[in-house]
Each structure stands twice: as structure tokens, then as C-alpha cells.
Image 1 (cartoon, helix red, strand yellow):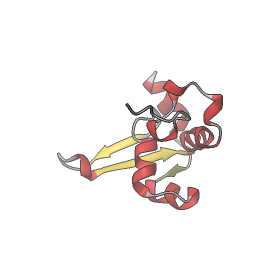
Image 2 (spheres, one colour):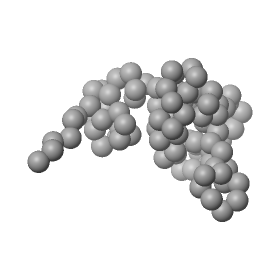
Image 3 (spheres, helix red, strand yellow):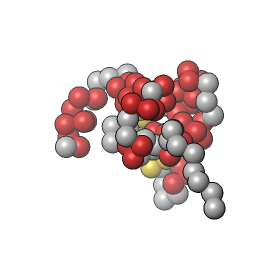
Image 4 (cartoon, one colour):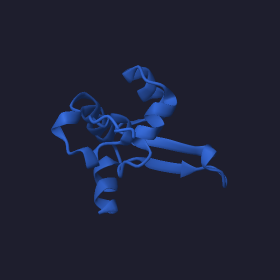
Length: 92
């Protein structure tokens, strides 16, 4: 499965987190949380610390994530990133 995603996205345009943050008008940390667990995103860890991770987001993954942001009600809640959930948490 992983190789299929890689084969399709190898020669696509790739974005960095700062590029998508600027395009979408969101904060860098918000975009990082949205893309970090996406299966198409390439993660390059520089050293041992997670703080030194570079994310390379293929155009198809960026489009998929942006579609989730625009239409959260179309998708099942369990498939949405935590930041996009259409439901408000119930507080006791």
C-alpha cells in the first residue's frame, strides 16, 4: 500500500508546511497537525528529535486535506483530523 502511494506522488509538486499555511491562511502548527498523520506525506527526520522533522506534502494530499477542511460533514467523523471534527465535545 505504501509503495502505491509513493509511486503516484513521486513526481507531483510538493509543499512545505509554511507554503500551505500561507495558501490556506492558517497557522503553521495547525497545518502540521492536519498533515502529520496523512499516509501520503513524506516525513524526513533530521536527528533524533521530532522537532527537527521536515514534512513534504504532495499536491494530491494537500487537495485531499483541504477538501476535508471545506466539507467536514461529507466524511465520517472518525476519518477527520481532530481539528476538523464537526461535533463539539460534550463536557461533564
